[in-house]
Image (cartoon, rainbow, N blue to C red):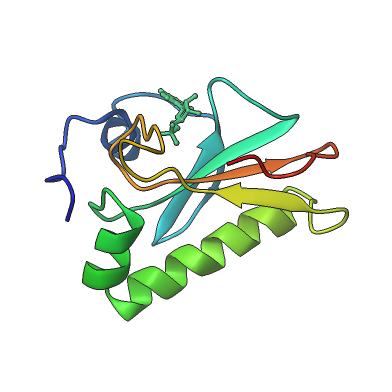
Length: 120
Ligand code: 5GP
């Protein structure tokens, strides 16, 4: 793992219910809520419930159930939000060069308008 997991991070507090969130989906493996600073008409964050900082950490250390559960949850959120058509964008910022701000793995789901080309 790049960084040790910090239980004081903001998404850990949201998972523990210490900070409120605008929840859109929850199951055994994942929680999804609206981003506090939306960059698109729909901007949802989907996080696994386990203590993972990065994709590489999660994919290497997560159980098959956790990984399957999380991947399914992302798809369920896209369906529930009504964005299967005309489409949506998934993005994960991992680490310093990608400006990951919160050290708990999260996938951004953007939708609700034509999003334009992906910019690196
Ligand atoms: P990152 O840059 O780590 O990929 O994105 C972190 C995201 O978390 C940002 O889009 C930011 O707006 C969002 N965020 C940060 N703090 C909070 C919070 O307390 N609640 C919610 N709902 N979103 C947050």
